[in-house]
Image (cartoon, rainbow, N blue to C red; front, side, top):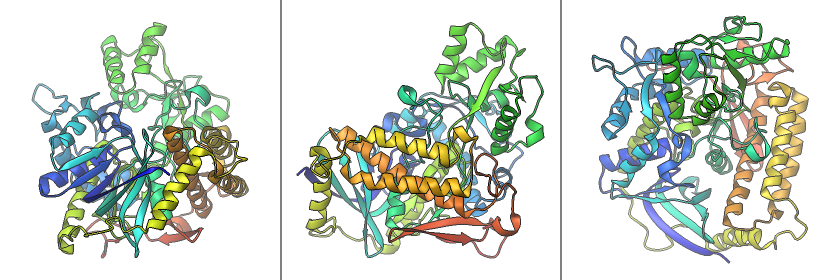
Amino acid sequence: MIKTEELYTDILIIGGGTAGCYAAITLAGLDPSLHILILEKANIRRSGCLAAGVNALNAYITKGHTPDDYVDYAVKDAHGIAREDLLLSMSEHLNEVTSHLEQLGLVILKDENGEYVTRGARNIKINGENIKPILAEAVMACPQIKVINRMNVIDLIKQDGIIKGAYGNSIEEEKLLIVNAKKTLVATGGAAGIYKPNHPGFSRHKMWYCPFNTGAGYAMGIRAGAEMTTFEMRFIALRCKDTIAPTGTLAQGVGAKQINARGDVYEDLYGLTTSQRVWGTVAEQKAGRGPCYLRTKGITLLQEEDLEHAYLNMAPSQTLMWVAAGRGPSKENVEIEGTEPYITGGHTGSGYWVDNGRRTTLPGLYAAGDVAGGCPQKYVTGALAEGKLAAEAMLSDLQADGFPEKPDSNPTGLPVSTVLEISGTIAGHLDGTLHESAKDTPEILEKRMQDVMDRYAGGIVSGYAYTEQSLKRADEELTALEKELPGIFCSDMQELTHFFEVRERLTVARVLIAHLLARKETRWHCFAENASHPERDDANYLNYVNSRYENGTIIMIRRPLAKRRGKNEQEPVA
């Protein structure tokens, strides 16, 4: 039996990435008496999507624009399926959190007049290699915030329909941690690794999205019965071939156009939304006009130098490849390709169904950042804004509750039998007693899952397309894989954590398939390329496709579109 430790806190934050760190900082500033606990699977200094840094803040209200303009842009890019109310509440805070980041030490580039240097209509340039350490240092400077690194949260604690905390395993020692909290924020990020990546095998972690964001935050909410939204709006990034480095730096930084192998500019033929840029590239390749490129040949040497510096801030492999080959972007166009699909609420609308305070449908539970749904195109500053909004809502709700005191006994509220069952299950995976005939490791199970998703659920191998029959086949295969989970043997706590990551990915994948089946149209080419229903259908699907997991069944829900303040009579609530 593994060791068990119990803790009690006012606020539990699951995930020490962008949104989680900023929520903690906000709470500490609002009420210094609060006890705040962050559980982080890695280490908050270099964890989450900001781990490697970024070279621009892609969500900012530049001069001459308003938050409403940003809402219009995001709704258009999402082909109408976005929560205008959530987008507006986020957009109204973008510049405020940016200013705070600068005060914390982030270097934002400025022109000769002291104005931020823009990159496009909604972006500003930064020196962002150290953006995550800056956030982490701000967290560590707050004495009321406690951080436990290397702690993998397994599930939420739910009692009488209310979320009362969570429990998880240490990655480094045989320990189960049980945390009771008055309010809990999920800020774990989205889901990578569900599909076979561009570079499987040894290089499988060389992907666009943080490979350690496994969908755990989604999965624990799904199992607890939280309502989820828009999983079918997958995200596929258009990236530089081989390095999987961002292409926006080229498209916006030097105005590079998408061209095919003949040199024809094709991007205007397919549309300029995020999904259409990927779709055009896939279509040109299918038509035999590939490979496809971003046209950089002929840019100035100064522009080339700026690009090399920019990629060193976030994707150094791209700069290293240029230098090693002796052929920079001024001499050779940059080949592009799509990644495997991801589920992320930071770029698309996938995630928890929340209200403007980022409250989920489960009392006591909040969501912010990539794990919160309905609010696409939030990027870094949008995740910060959602962390702030969730923090304010949690404090307001605590005040309304009268700041309940810590209970005198049994702080977790979990029955002793439940604690013994959880710790016994973990021990069983470690000593192999759960299933003597088990042969697969977590790594093998993950590969089998990715093969199924790639082949039957719209992965790279099928040009991102799927049919109703292929999705049903995928669900059958995943259901069979889930049945193998109880017998998986894990050699140590690190492999046990990988086991739980595979379990989370399987949960998310099955909900994703249910969403893809429910939306019988093709609204976002490539993102949701439904070969059984290839046309867009506004008459029946200009609405949100939501889901709730109940007694082993995924129940699908339709909700009407939500407008921003002043554009409809009533804002939706979770």
